[in-house]
Structures are given as structure tokens and as C-alpha cells.
Image 1 (tube, rainbow, N blue to C red):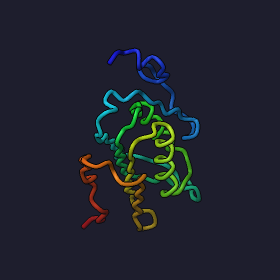
Image 2 (tube, rainbow, N blue to C red):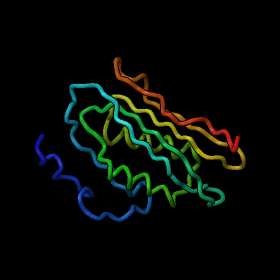
Image 3 (cartoon, rainbow, N blue to C red):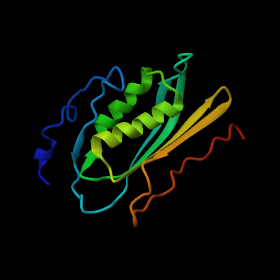
Length: 154
């Protein structure tokens, strides 16, 4: 695969400012070097942060994003910047998790996508949010996320 597939990327290989909002973030796609093969790509964001839309207090989550690429992959730096843009964004856990999934689906049109959002307790209650686009393609190995349910200090 030639390097010219990277020529239309605006963020890779240079200093890029953190987007002010998730809507302002530019998610970039690159051609999948193996569109003829069904395989799983996984991104893990163990330090995801956003804000409670009511109190403005910070919320923290461990996100696991699994997808089976179609014709495009998400460029990882653009994904990192997109996820970081939630740092000052007020939204409930469910909204953040599902919005990330829907944005990825819109940009890269994967054959399958699953996001697991393991949110740390707010008001003493941990909230886990899961979303997927359907059944994974047959014969694709989809490992467990490896994230344990919240147990407190026990």
C-alpha cells in the first residue's frame, strides 16, 4: 500500500489543537488495506472523561470500541482527538456512548461496531452502556472486553 493514502489527512504528523467540542472534531478515515478480510480492530480508552450536563462535575469511563472494518479504518489520532473533545462536553453517559458509536458508523461505515462504556460511579451507582450495530460477521474473533464489573473497594 502506498503512502499516498495518507495525503488527505489533516491531523496526522503535525501538532493539532484539541477540538472545542465533539461536533467540531474531525474524525478521519483511511482506506482499509484488507477490505477482503473480516477482522476486528479494537480501541481502548481507559481514561475517557466528560461532564455531567446538570452539575458540571467530571465523569470518567473506560471505553472499549470494537469494529470490523469495511472499506475504511478510523485514523487513530483523529479518534483520540475526538474522544478528548468530550472533556468539556456535558452529556449523560448513555448519550456519550451512543453518540460516539453513531459518529464512527457515519464516518467509516464498518461492517460491524460495538462500544462498551464502563462508567465509574456517579452518586454511588456505576452505569455501563453497551451498543452494537448488529451481529458480528461470521468467523470474526471478538474477545471479551477484559473490563470487570465495578466492585468498589471489595
